[in-house]
Length: 75
Image 1 (cartoon, one colour):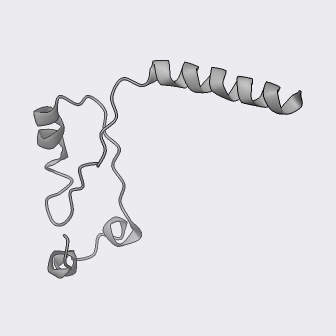
Image 2 (image 1 turned 120 degrees about the horizontal axis):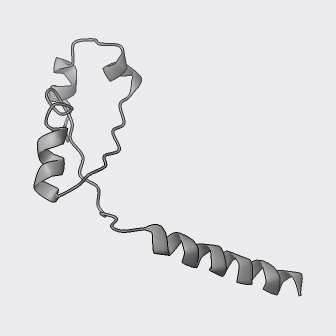
Image 3 (image 1 turned 60 degrees about the horizontal axis):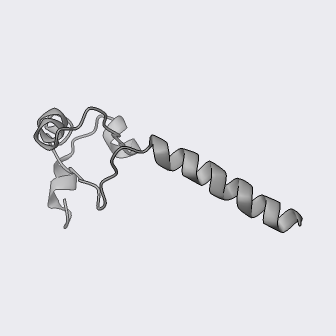
């Protein structure tokens, strides 16, 4: 009985959350390297986005020279 109640509650909350989601892009767009933060606005505008999630690591936050990031594969 308790297991069935938990399942019903989970499904109810999941349905409520689903109604809030408008769009979700998979895979995400990843910008990496010098100039990536300054190009976020243009990238968002091209895709018609109004909200962005920007994540930076400690290397970026430290303000160090980011030329090494350019040399890494995938960036």
